[in-house]
Length: 56
Image (cartoon, rainbow, N blue to C red; front, side):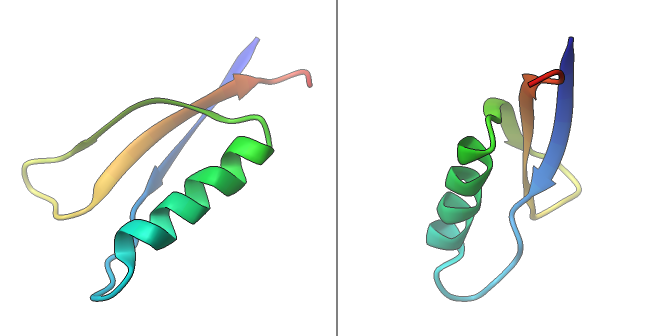
């Protein structure tokens, strides 16, 4: 069985991409995989859907 998590990139003026990369790598160490990502038309935040096996 799978479980899912939705995360969003936090808005910062500096190092936003690098900080988000670090956050994604931390989730990867916990077994999460990026399924998809995108920006909602009414939002300035980048959202990502993560997936992993529930019974790890």
